[in-house]
Image (tube, rainbow, N blue to C red):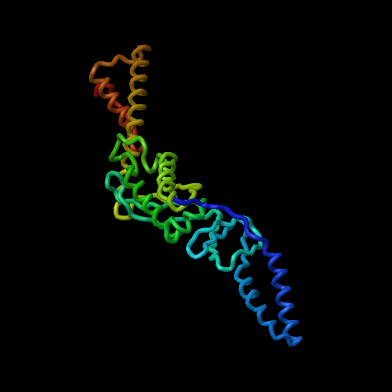
Length: 283
């Protein structure tokens, strides 16, 4: 497989001076009535197509009758063989924000995902000749890499509690895997991946509402668990202190009643409304 070959082209200013002299000679010849002045037209016509400009962070791929001759990366005004075709390839970094695609994650949930890619051409030969339209190649291969990545990880660990890395929580690991996958796919086109990361991630609309309710339920259960754990500790401390200080002598029924009342007060959603007992403790 061939690779890029950087070459130095001739300065365009030298040929521009020669072209100016030929034009002056042609005009002078016509004015003076010199019959053979018209022969100067041929070199003028041949010189003109040889001029080209390379802007900063740009390049020109030179091809002579199907044979690759090299790439000019120096910026400036140049002249080369007029029979050379000159393909412009930018070496600047480019952003690619892919469309949001609907795919299934590892456990089959439909999700919406897109990727933000920063890339540039590293090898102009591969970009020009190994693929057809390298910009379109970047788009298609990035889309394929995103689809493969999404199918390799679950969105979260609700349905796959054994998953150490998920699309939602393991962003660093997922972005690294995405960058490696895209780099491997674009290497054939001489493309350097500077950065790749997930730009948008969400459940598909048809299941988003259900998944939100599930997340809320999980959060509520976790919060209730913490409340119950705290309430049990508070009740235990209260009973222990009352018993140690001999403030109240509890039998099993009284202890059970107090525990029940305290748990209702501590774990209830609303503030408890006290009921005053005007009789005896046993009434």
